[in-house]
Amino acid sequence: MNEIQAPAADSSPRVPVHQRLERPRSIADLATQIALPLAALALAAFAGWFVWNTRRVEHSPAPPAMPPRSPFAATLACSGIVEAQSENIAVGSATPGVVVEVLVKVGERVEAGTPLFRLDDRDLRGELEVRKAAVSQAKAEVIRLEAEPRQETIPPLVATVNEAKATAIAAADALRRAEDLFAKQVITEQDAIEKREADAFASAALQKAEAELALREAGSWNYDRDVSRAAVLKAEADLAKTEIDIDRLNVRSFVAGEVLQVNVRPGEFVGAPPGQPLIVLGNVDRLHVRVDIDEFEIDRFDPAFAARAVPRGSAGTEYTLTFVRVEPFVVPKKSLTGDNSERVDTRVLQVIYDCSPERDGPSGQGKRLFVGTQVDVFIEADDRAGREGERDEARGQGDEESPTGKNGRH
Image 1 (cartoon, helix red, strand yellow):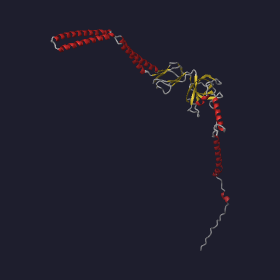
Image 2 (cartoon, helix red, strand yellow; image 1 turned 90 degrees about the horizontal axis):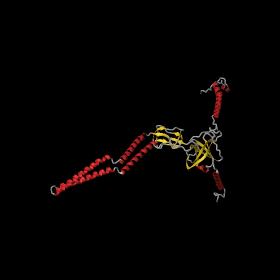
Image 3 (cartoon, one colour; image 1 turned 60 degrees about the horizontal axis):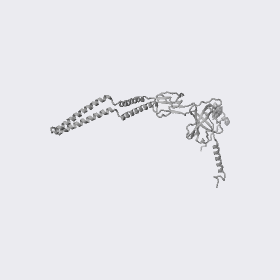
């Protein structure tokens, strides 16, 4: 049998392990061991810097305008709106039409009866001429009836009467002779009847002519003249109505004041009523402030207490308010402050104050008030009702906690 021989041993010299792993360092080794850690540290530092500089910082900047402060210890804070002393009068047109001329400008003072703007009146001008002709016709008819009888018409009627008389005489004579002949049996009965009919016809014609002559000589009937005069009055009334319609196309001011707003231009069509006020007027010699008092604060209001108004954006300026009247009809709130927590379904009591033109600010200079400006109004409040309500509430809570109270009885 063949013997299996072991492989021959390696005759090369053996190298230690630690000597076989050592090799020269390359650029990749330096980038891995030194550059990458440094880059990581740099990125970490940059991330920390970026986070620190972009963090949200809570600032408390000063408001652009200082909020108003109440001068009273107990205050009823309300919002108000400035209006004219006569209230803001929105002028419209009672008649639809096209505006041909605007006669006033914003800021112009007008007196009562001053024309503001004019509408196209050409169709009514034509109708006016027709009405004038109708009046002339009716008056002429009255004159004609009052001038009756016309003397030139009498002689022809007299001649007609004379002719009828002659005809009647002839017919009567013919009838007399015919009856004599009929009695002598000379003519027939038919001939006699024809003569009687001719005589009757002639007599009737005579009566008719005499009646027409008498009617013409009597002139026009009183009732006919009355009807004609009534027709004149009607024609004159129609003429006056047309003139009024033309005058209404010239829209005028009914009060003295200042033009606050003009919302109409020549060429525009205005309806009746318009969608917006065409011209706004008001007496701004004295200004009023319409204050809205929340329905929950009405009990704290007293007209005898002092009130101040501060215009928006001018906290250093105060206006002294003088009580004028209370409008006792509580209405939905319309003048909104814009606060996010404001309730828009609140009903308010409107109080009118007169706004003194003197400014009570420390420098005597402040924001000029314009109609429509919103103001913050502070009214000295009556806290007696509030304190009584708090005492009643505290008393009720005490009764509930007490074992002998109303709710603690066994």
